[in-house]
Length: 117
Image (cartoon, rainbow, N blue to C red; front, side, top):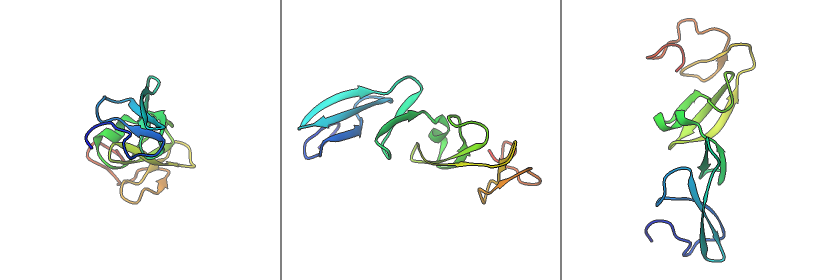
């Protein structure tokens, strides 16, 4: 099977390989229906729902600053999609680049572009 198909699939939502983001499709009783997420959203194949587009996930896997959740949030990216969120409990926190533990200041922990990129 190549491309978007409902052949052999149960009813549900699937990421589209034939159409660009934010397209996805629904299989219902063997019929395929193309759908699209709202602006600034994307279809997440892990949750099978539309959600805020975390563009930082397109730049590699790992923990990153979250665009969708705001300054105190980190997002764990995998294969271009967010799979987990973590909130730092302190004002203007930083997430340690290697341990991903929230700390109040960066101290000597720096990444290539500054603290905890």
